[in-house]
Image 1 (tube, helix red, strand yellow):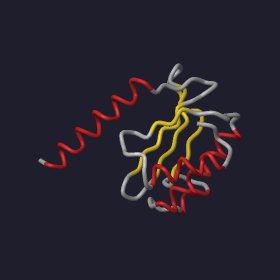
Image 2 (tube, helix red, strand yellow):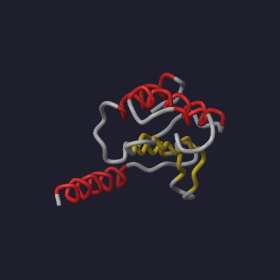
Image 3 (spheres, helix red, strand yellow):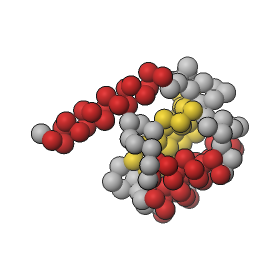
Image 4 (cartoon, helix red, strand yellow):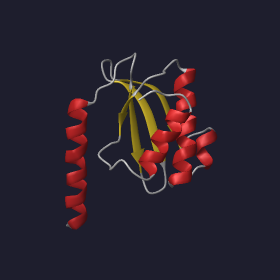
Length: 119
């Protein structure tokens, strides 16, 4: 019961954020999703509904060895920024997905900024 309420409140926060945050081709939305074991980052053009670039600890690549903690978030943030810059993306709109901006989310965002993305 308590878990269901927490998930419902997080979903409401996410919807509230998504009302205001939208990505375009020039400035896509950087969507971040954390699970207990993995980190997912996508760069999304909401006008066409397409993902322009993505990085995850699930798939192939450098991020596979990272875990879902603060150190892993720093590494994934830098890898995601590198992938975005390789696709020609230099500025993004940050979508924290309804989670508070501290800890892993903040570490990922700071690492992406240091790697060259503009928020």
